[in-house]
Image 1 (tube, rainbow, N blue to C red):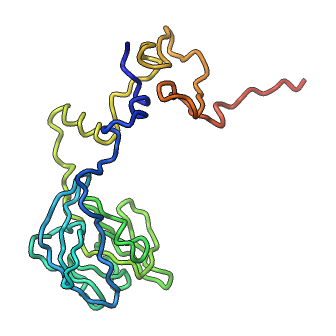
Image 2: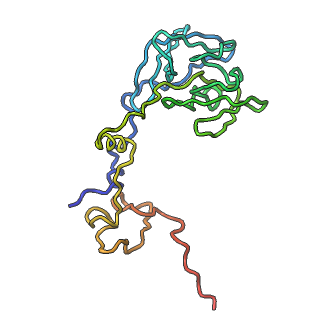
Image 3: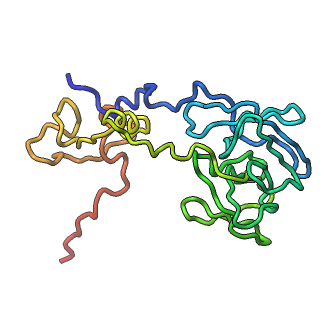
Length: 243
């Protein structure tokens, strides 16, 4: 008996293929304050959440509202975060995009007004306020892409903490193996036709070809669902002789 194929193990739904849900605290988002309201919050703790590379700041606001926000650079316990109209555009403050001047580094940007922050939440990441217009605010993302966002959306001044997390060398092959496996990149990737017949449905041949059609149906069981799954086209097709 050979070991089961990767697609069959994934189909079983083992914990190594599931998203990390145990150990989650609360959604990391801004509190539901109105833009015209002014509030002040104090960072009471900096914590780590499973599955998140950036640290979370536990913020207690003046109305006893507690929120978890991705911590910006320079954050420490006891730091003050201000939000609302008239708040200065300084580090760690939360403002609407219309109140942030051009060229400012921002993070944790709302994609739609009031969603609590959806963009630029990874460790060390930041965007730049590029320009203001009547249609909205243009933001330059870390990828170089420009995105037009509603000027009522909120953002935090500064960059997300945790930069340099990926700069540490692996040192050992085992560390890299664990890193790749945690992201679903199981390597090295061995072709199915290069394996034995007991290990893969495409294996067992002397020559490096499958020897049969590689397309399978959607209702195929996980152990056999390898190759092209219900493809619309599998090749250019043969031209018929019109003579």
